[in-house]
Image (cartoon, rainbow, N blue to C red; front, side):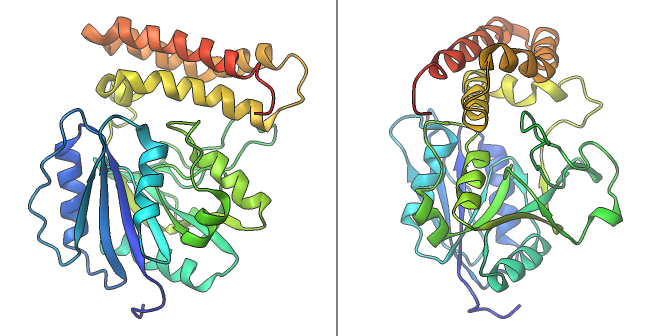
Length: 310
């Protein structure tokens, strides 16, 4: 792919994960990426991280925030100081290869009606197992279809552009599309990518998954006991926001649904029950904090959905 067809800034939100950030930056550093102008690390860690020695040719800017803002606000802080035409967002618990960027950038550079593309996600600890290919909303819009989740790689599903309604782990987005929609909704402090997809689509843009491009997610494998509790055990406070955000997002997707709160509680059990069971089994000294955050997130989410205009 020829340089000059587009310029890209890589934005990495990070919180208290030095080793994984180091792995990600190291993987970026060995890639040949002539169209990437800069890496912006947005750091809201309790103690600002000391960035590792970065041996690549791409400049790295370290943006240290004074307090925790969580993922949505960190992403916004990153893209708003970027000077490129495109922004590649990636969470700090992933690694990349040169092949991550080639299909993704080639497609979005050449598709003017496409605002955002996500790569397929494989497990770093076993690259033959799929974390997810794409995440379209189910027909009833109460959940997401996790295409390929926890299954062996399927060549019939790779090398395609597929519909998606969320952008987990990583995505590349046109800057003008971020500007026109205001970027990530910071009232959804952790899980705002799905709502961004809805805003982009309502504005006439396409949002897709490119299953010929891959990133590698450094999380527990499905057979590990800690699978359902991985993020929570690392960061119990995040549980509150994930639960709360789900209820708020569902209300935005179903604003006029009768008995919404009852239906939302029943629908939420499909992920709250296995997650809560994992917290009890694997939470250790953080078990009580995790369970409290689940309850508080549920209560706060239901409380917010009583407000008008969301």
